[in-house]
Amino acid sequence: MSPEESFGSAENRMQSVGLALEELLVTAQKQDCLTIGIYESAKLLNADPDNVVLCVLAGDDEDDVALQIHFTLLQSFCCDTGITILRVSGIQRLQQLLGAAHANKNQEEHGDLHCMLVTNPQADHCRLQEVGTYCQESRRLHQWVPELVLQER
Image 1 (spheres, rainbow, N blue to C red):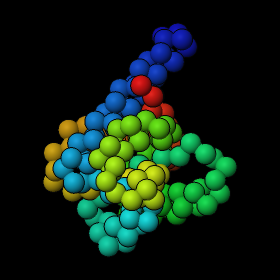
Image 2 (spheres, rainbow, N blue to C red):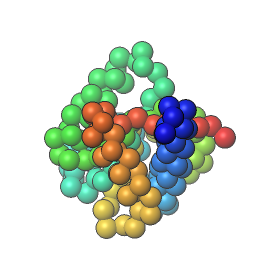
Image 3 (tube, rainbow, N blue to C red):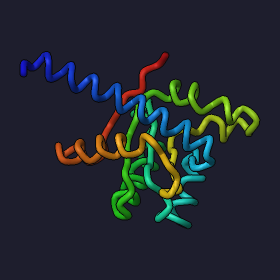
């Protein structure tokens, strides 16, 4: 396989996983299995980490030191407790997907899509396996926290 084919294949894989993640987050939100917000996520991780199956950390601003510190602490906790972690960029896409359901909540909560937890391992999250497999494969390639770019539409 040529380097161009390999790159195209990896790009297709990232797109497929990105779509799977989007579907997973929307489904989890509809099933009330999605915790949104750094503070809310930290509270849940402290109270019931065994119920969390995926932690999504979203940030487009690498210069936000406070956010990076929060991410580091959340990543460390998730790693210690065996929770799958995925970092994504594309906050605007997340707002498109998940923002409408939060239109009735206060603005502070609506704006904090930096951390999301998918909970309730018994629920049938149809795309969780695909996202989890991508994360496992990335870790095997020595990417401690897998990353994904969500494409705006």
